[in-house]
Length: 248
Image 1 (tube, rainbow, N blue to C red):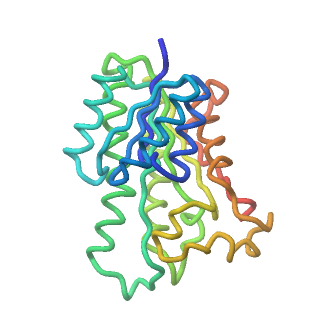
Image 2 (image 1 turned 30 degrees about the vertical axis):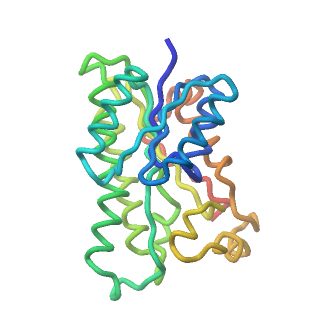
């Protein structure tokens, strides 16, 4: 039986790179997107062009009803889930905390934290032996920002990723005896489109000198870590926070 993975935020960046590598590893891939259907479909087409199976599925992870519909679609069209990658996330313009609006904070935590937890909840309901599942793996996308705090830039984003670190450890221990491993990858400065959405499209290159390895990472480098944590090669790893940050 072919393993099935749902990857949120898979129309771009780390999510898209993870989707392509997952297909190469033999997974059927549900490619989640919020708005950009064309980008998600392009990922699906790349997977199908190499003989893989993929499905684009729309949902804003900050909306519980959309998440429920997404999982039901995966159930119906691909089958019972065996892996989840929580890659959907948002950032915002660089700002001090004393200038942040409540709307910004709610958007940040609704997507980055609550969205990831609700998706994990639905995955556990399908994968846990407690619920008749066959086990599986969850990988959350955190950030090295959770350890650095991102002062005067994205303290809210860093705090949201700190919450993901805590959630990863807690959920891992909660479901360890139910056949589910839960881990997180903490990328550093990665050259993806997310910087443009925060108003700094050149941020990765401009900050390369601050990284011990003197360069930004790539989405595929992070995706390789994601796929390792999903794989049987990481069979004794759960509750782990794996930094892929060039030494930061």
